[in-house]
Image (cartoon, rainbow, N blue to C red; front, side, top):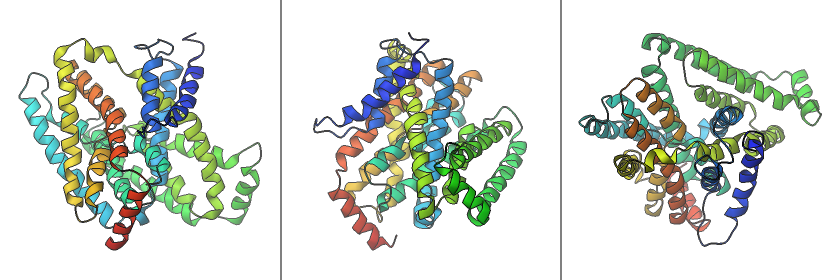
Length: 401
């Protein structure tokens, strides 16, 4: 059964999660948190119904890319440029300094001998994982949501770029930098073409096939996604950077009322099929025994969780003029949700190069997973809707964005 029906169990968990979230228990638990917990339950360290291998591992990679694609698609530079983007860059810079300090302290222990690897692992924000939470709660289009969208974008993309340049084992740093410039040029050219070059015959063709069996616009979106997915791998970058870039290009090309139907179909495909494999698969992949069998590793998990909150949460102090006091702690909690996929990739590189020990790597992955489970739930409790959202919206209008 494990080998024959992994899709059934993943989809069963994906259907059960939103149903469980509707149970009135006085606590608003994000659906993605329930999906991860259900993944642990059906995984090899739970009921053993699904193993993280073969088809499951492949679909997990596509699901992870889908979360970054949707994050890129939601990115609207008109909403985050100026103050939100400046604050996001400043906040990530402060996080970088805080993470470097924490990494130096860990460097003094036998657990690690590569501060750079640890610094990057502590500076991530899981925008892709939080995007469904913000969309479902109606916060994405609020001033709070725009500020976090900017912070989350920088917190997700900057570590990917830094990791590709500094930790890549494919090419030298200078070669990677050249490839990065070429990649950015291709993204900008694609975005400009998508926004500006819309020949009438092509537009008519896409409209005519949108509701036909060919679904040409949807297939075109998938082709663009896989193109950037492959391109980043060939350049030695993490393919999730390509997924984010593809989402940004598609998002810019599908602005406006006429493209709303296309966006609805993309939402249905990605959120209905690909993305559950990432969140449920995160739970399936989680190696619970690696943390519980060793006391040192188990004690490191809450310590690193606290470090994540300090590194990505303290920059909220920069937002004190732009966020109402009740919104600051939820903002810090959302910002501190670590990108589990990036932490896994970075720690895998660290273990492979013997720059960090296996116990620390397991503890960092465990802390990243806990941040996905705990921080969004706490933020949802501390920031009830819709009254608080209205409060933030009024404050945002006073700030001028």
